[in-house]
Image (cartoon, rainbow, N blue to C red):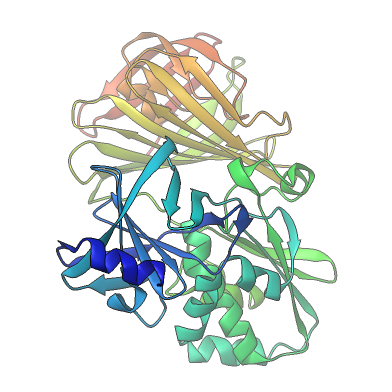
Length: 428
């Protein structure tokens, strides 16, 4: 008798209706990786594993395994979500959780290991991509591209290279890369050549490629002509779609990205003049401060230095005025690096991408006065020593002393004088 039928005869259970979300995992059945096995999650805890026509339900609340027919799930056209009515389940035993995201299941004569997904690092063919993450093919098949953007892709007459750097573990890649690939396929233009490059786990491979091409986020889409880069798409669209962003790059009308962090109303903006220790003009800084959903503030700053460096920062404080997050992107000499810092109240954890030093992570004990190279963030610290998020990426920890004069009307520093003699002054 089939294992599934035997289980139905042994015990019948039920579970309420659920909405499920696709969850890319690596599933090994009897020791072999099986890309055809689907995993989904519901209520941030239940895990559904679909093996052929069978659905295994893993419930971490009691480590139980139950089973029913896979046809019990009704999938959306792109297969990224599914719904289920109240399910009639048969008990199938239990599972072992070996770490925070790895599950070992025994179901009949099968041993099933559900593990975190390991993205391939390096060049990939389209067939390899679809085979690695079949749901991406479903996303592409279900997507209807922007018709006008497809027309512009089809009209490209000069040989153009589109290099898509992505990771199959990345949600932004999952959302946008299949859509771009569908748009390029629909355009069917022999002048447009596509290369796909995968980024491995923890953003550490292929490290030489990541550093050489200043890859700080995925997906990154680099558009080239004659071997020279003419623009790039990073992480999320500026416009309504990724294909629209790409044709805007080709047509030299790309818009600056506002950043992906959630924000509310703008409450202040302005410009600082920066002077070095010898009182020479050293650059300018444009900033804007926004309310944050749930309380607190987001500060965005773009610093243009006399030596050609461009530093972009995002930083947040919570409703209690405590620092929570900072992101610093340094662009210089045609290269860029990005570091992100998160403060838990005691320590700062940092991750870096594209830094020349190759350091990718770091944990630093730091006071609550976490500030960035942006002048406006000095207003979040008291006068005195403060930990400063470095523009160069992780590894360069430094404390500075600062004297801050606040502009009471705007609620931002009017003047900041640092211990090295440099000054930042609000000019408008």
